[in-house]
Length: 180
Image (tube, rainbow, N blue to C red; front, side):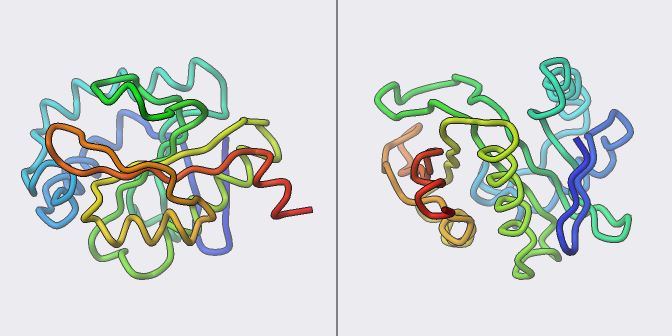
């Protein structure tokens, strides 16, 4: 998949992106709501790459993509089935999960919303997914704002490892009602 929005380009993640991912995950602000602000070690990112790249074996519609503006690395986004890791089992994780991580310098420009909207449109109109959802820590107001502006609605609040989390989602039927 190659996807362009008004200002951004999405391209497949490659093994050559390790340095970009290390730099991104080294910013304490970027990692604040993911692990308390701790950097992800280079070795862990390198070890994760085969798993991240394996999504492309399922076809061109799912996986991880690098977000760029004019060739400059801004972050990444995924559009994938949920990994199925960890509790809670009572939260509906059917459909396709959307997630994103942007450089701190890119925050506040609407990039995450722009990318999410484009993937949601593609998911419902081209890929034919039944449901799109995203999750974040309840305290992550910025990410929750992106989810809402992208057209997702709050559907669940739950606890994950003792921290309150939220899920925002939209079904294909809801999408069609809004865009007929």
